[in-house]
Amino acid sequence: MTDFEKKMHHDGRLYGTAMLLAICAFPLFASIKYGIWPNFGVIWPGVLTMWILMASYVLSEMIAFPPVLGPGSLYLTYITGNLQNQKIPCALSAMSIAGIESGTEKANAVSVVAVAVSSITTTVIIALGILLMAPLTPVLNSPVLAPAFANVVPAIFGALAGLWLLKEPKVSLVSVILCVLGVMVFKIDLQWVLLGGILLTVVIARVMYQSGIIKK
Picture (cartoon, rainbow, N blue to C red):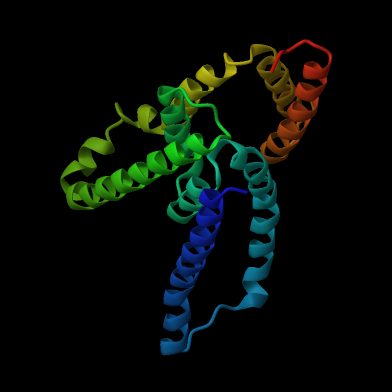
């Protein structure tokens, strides 16, 4: 592990812990001040369901994203949020524009800058959105614009997927076929298809590389 990566892990754990404490501070202090505590006997089924539901997503992200983003941007991404619909596309686009292969120290540095700029931009846009929410509400709720807002995430990932699918089309084709079969034929929940698709694609890509079907 390089000194850069050690620094990123140290700072990421420090700021991640600080953010977790800050998130928990308000509900904790509010409960202490007003003497109102959650009824865990009522909420635990919902909490357990959410943990089970999110477990596959979290496992999938922790397998797929660290080799691409690197430690620094990954910590920053989990602290600031909007992982899949903003930070990942920004980091991948920045590395593609810079012509840098993912997984290198240069790629880690570029992705940190991309995610940081994305986080600052998000903060500015949210602030403007709060200020302009009232006057823009009639426009944003317009039936004409509703389909566009409903397809923002698919549009982002569609454009991004096209770029990366073409980098190694043979592996990409296998991955897409596996996921489509999982969802359409075997009726597996999407989160488990995502996790299983990542694992199977890695194994199949390794077999294809060893057999000479792909070169890298």
